[in-house]
Length: 77
Image (cartoon, rainbow, N blue to C red; front, side):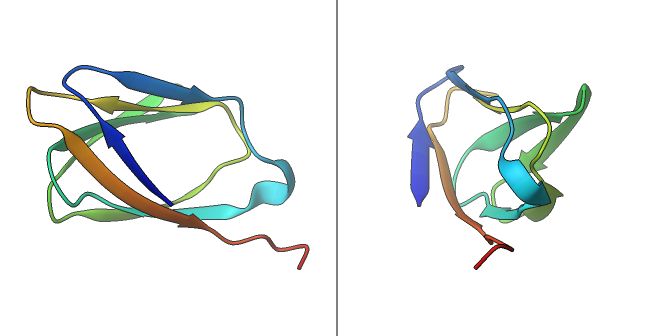
């Protein structure tokens, strides 16, 4: 799945079941990733893996649209 967020837009997620790892890559823009009340800033070209069972959010941190391809691995399958 790929997400595109316009300047300063945010998307919040309540968390996913079963501690599924989420892999994401910042294709363009700057991401402010908040997970478990901890904030991380990732620039274009960076990648991250996060266990996404806790509430988390994705925010486009500047005026460049954020292009954010991501995948989630469902451990139950």
